[in-house]
Image (cartoon, rainbow, N blue to C red; front, side):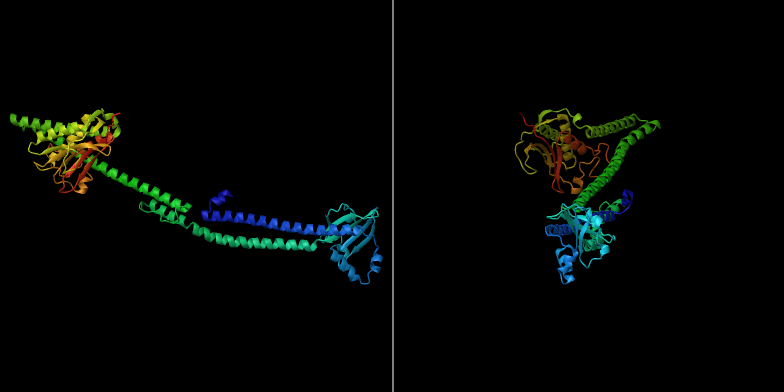
Length: 490
């Protein structure tokens, strides 16, 4: 049965289970009602028999001849017996012999209970079932001892009509139950179809997603407080997460391909220079001492560049795997780094105005504020040097640079701002990506950046529990910020 139900649709299974429950419920209700009604009818008959038998048992016995002679019209006897509800009376003496047998004339003598069945009835007033002599139906009979003489009077009444009534009631209940079951089943079929319609919509949505359309969503099929509404909401949440996961995966794969391509190119560039110089030397093309020295210098520069690139890549890998393990923390103040950065930039370009201020924005002034942190000074110096180097490399000579330091909203902040050309939004959004350069030209000088500086700066900042920020716009300069947790001294 379970296997058969398992092959049916959810709609059919629900309908079958509902129909079975309805059938059981209707059957129980019908059985209880008919049983109670039958019990009530029998109790009414029993009470009537007991009352009449009690009264008759106290009346002196009369023979049939006396009864007939006392009544001028026989139909009055029939009416009297039927009016009392006891169409059959039998008197037994102390030996069990029938002394009087009176029944309504409308009753056929063959349909009466036998004297043997009536004789066996106890005289305690308890009603019992007895069968008709011809088997046409059952009777109810009650016996009482006669008063003033030894013997028993038994009153009996047929239950044929009552039983027929109950049979008709049972048949009507069965037919009515079947009709109700059919009607409710049909109504339930359409109601279940309407109720399960949202599930079919969800099924179609799932099929569309299985075909690759991850943008498909389940529409609002029901209020969120209902089971269907909660299911649709949960599915949409899951689909959104899957969509984002696939999108992130695709973006990650794209970044990985770009990263590998950039790494290959960055490694190839110095290797080509080294390979070219060695080939020229091997071919004997470098005959002059000056040419040989120049080739050796080029090999040294490219080797240095290659070493710096591999060191940067190794540092990024280490920061990705175990960032905290790459730090040697100690209490320090960012003002030290800001002051050193100002001197370094002034030494690099004496013509460039460099100002050390507080956190007052690009056009403000103010004294540098305290910014104590628990950090690796060498690693943070690498971050600040990168910020200052970017300001020097990507702004015209003589462009003013401001280095601000202080505490803001419970965080230690060091910023490097310039009045240079700034960056477009699409450039700013990728400024911290690995190997990203605003100028994608591959024809760079040997000393050009590989595009890892800002990526390393961000990784180092995050390893310290902070981050880096960029505020820029075309023609509005750029401001790089190092944001770290502020050290609170106990």
